[in-house]
Length: 336
Image (tube, rainbow, N blue to C red; front, top):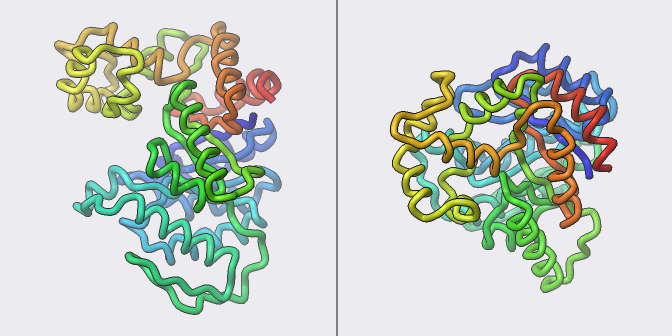
């Protein structure tokens, strides 16, 4: 099993490059950079790392066809991929905070992702390329400057319809915060669909995004994990009900605005919300603890490997250098 890392899109390019090169030296497979509403453009921000690195993959995430036309996504990926000599990956999903901020309705979500994947795949691997879909079209795309092999295309997929689509249209799926049980269900669903359509599963990747708060100071790790817990899967009832009651989930949902607000306020508690519910969410939805708990975290990651997860995508919010070294020196040798 490989380890990827996600670096914050607020980081300036020199720092992103420095951390990316450190990750490369420690055997990390891919550096992902998110596309947030208030963040830097991931394509521009990763250009220096793409040019200066030699083995690590660079990956803007999560792209979507609501806010960016698939043609523009494909062209930007091809350009970055030339700088990286074919080491670009990406995640195409159904959109999030940026789409909401732009006031764009989430209509035909699975079709948006599918047509975006089909157009980007065609642009990057099947030229000259033309496409006519229900939502998007392109005619006779045939750039002469492309030399690198095509980028690897993940679909953001947790749920049945998106999983069925991804089994045909993507090179892999990137799940988000899924437990071992739910991840196994997603992997099985993709394999079942591949069997239905006669697709060879060889080379298909199963990646799971997880937040990492493993610090020298366990109290700081717990504080940061609770502070940012609103950005995990709290709104997904099918995930939350795995480990809490219907009533407990209702209490969480009643406090969602205040839970989100903890991040900006640098707080780890919400008035009226039992701390044990936040602790439960941290324990079930993140990788959190002191360095002395690393063996427990490694055992948990090995559970994912056992059910077919091929890659773990680790978000590093704080102490990134420390996290990269821990992952490269302690975790990676234990899970490969």
